[in-house]
Image (cartoon, rainbow, N blue to C red; front, top):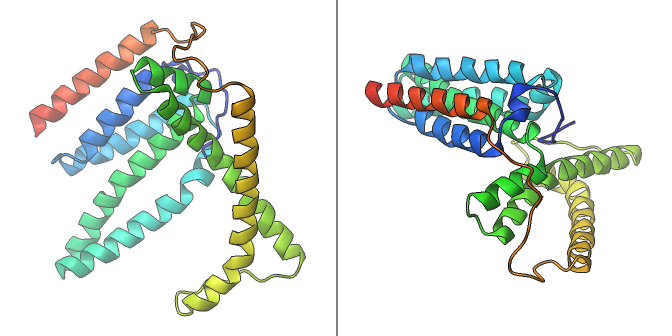
Length: 243
C-alpha cells in the first residue's frame, strides 16, 4: 500500500511549488473549520476531488491511504453527535458534515504528500525560515510513514505464516492486546534498527557540521503558482464575506 508515499506524475499539481501547496493546506483548514455554510463544505470536498483528478495520481493509492478515515469518520461522528444532541436526525446531519471537514483535510493531506517530493518539501520549509533541523525532522517523519506501513505488513505476513491469529474485538480488549503484541514488538524492534542506521548515516555525512547551508536552486515560483495563489486569495475573500 502506497501510504503517503511520493508518486511522480507530469501534472500541474506536481509542478506547483510546495509553498503554494502549504498555503492551500492552511487556507483550506481555516475555511472548513470556520462558521461557513454546509454548501461551502460540500464545495470544498468537490474542489479537493477535482485537484486529485488533476494530479493524475492513481485513485487506488488515494483510496488505500484514506479509506479508513473516509469510513470511520462519518460513522463515529454521527453516533457521537446523536448521543450528544439526543436527536438522531440532527445528530446524523451535523455529524456527517463535521466528518466531511476531516475527510477534506485527509484527502488534501494525502494529495499534498503524494505530489510533493521530500527534498522539495524540506527546501521549501527552510525557505519559509523554518530551522533546518526541524524541517529535516518533519521531512524524515513523513518519509517514514510508508516505511512503517511496509514493516507492519511484513511482520503481519510473517506472523500469519507462523499460524498466528490476529484478532481484534472491542468486547475482549485484553485478548486483542495479547494478539497484537507479536505484531507490535517486532515492528518496534525493526523501526529502532532503521532509526539507528539512519542516525549513523546522518553522522557519517557530518550533519550540522556548518551552521550555514547551501542549496541548489530547485524551487522557483511559476505562473501556475501565482494563478493558484490568486485563486486562493479570491476564495478566502468569499469565505470571509460569507462569515
